[in-house]
Image (cartoon, rainbow, N blue to C red; front, side, top):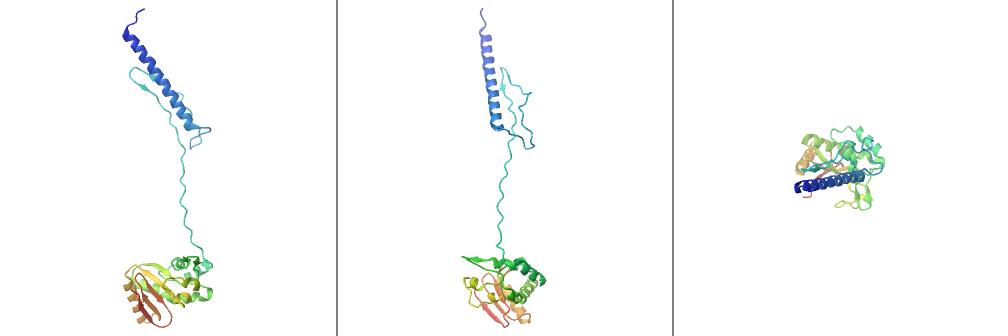
Length: 233
């Protein structure tokens, strides 16, 4: 029986299309099994099921396979560790002492933090109990400077220094008033010269008696009991 050439070509094309469709279905099933893995489930805890009503068809115009949707598990990224502050001996009690002073602008935290300093293997510490009261007049002067300048205190860079810590601080001198818990190094949100002049004005008014030093980025303040003035710029 002679079959027209056009019919033979159409039959061959349909067979080829069917083969492609079956191949696509097999690839889809393999991909599903690869992602599914043993015991794989969705984030809601329901196992994935291959769609029963999915069909694969072939025609003389196109071959299209419908791939199943595969839900991949979410991966949680690790959180960055939070830096831990070095805890100081008697920190809670010293905090309570500072709170009792009822300063307007200086918080216990910003007064205590400079004591956490470490240089090499030497760490600073809070002052011993018998020196706590020494810092009160100096803190009140720093608080008043902040009140009159009307600008924030950016940082207290130095308060009490233990003798061993003071000995390795660059530029420090033996017997510094920092070792007696009577001195502060202060950075205000203004030129250091402006804060320096305000400290001198307070001293002239009799608000305190002590030392005032000007440095490129901060001022030194202490309540040693007599006037002393210097500039290191």
